[in-house]
Image (tube, rainbow, N blue to C red; front, side):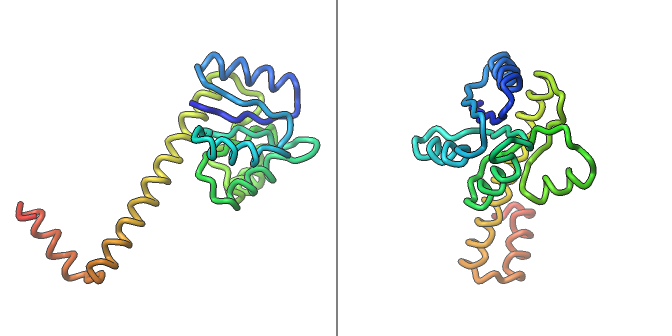
Length: 163
């Protein structure tokens, strides 16, 4: 799994690096969110996109919320995981509205990072599959004229082994 890890605290970068290495991930570490979106776009352009972005919420210059908003505004389909000690209900609701896929509560260990990476990847895969299914259904409906009676008959034919 390829991970972009963003945190402005040296100790957190060191810990993150150790966790990601232990998990067998390839990674890029950034000390600020300022260049995060450029890094994500560059990786996509090079044909080697990140599988997930882990970003600290509170950073001196550009924080995690701004990073997530920028990624979502560009419609980049990458899971974004917030790393934060601020996990009150209102904050969690806000993080979800901004577009974070998951929140990783600090302090955390390697097992929590692994769980977050796996869960974020699963959620993104489900989102992409749902989007593809919706697009296929829309294309099919447009092609057939979207006739509900035809859809119902096709379903009955399949159930009877005729389709």
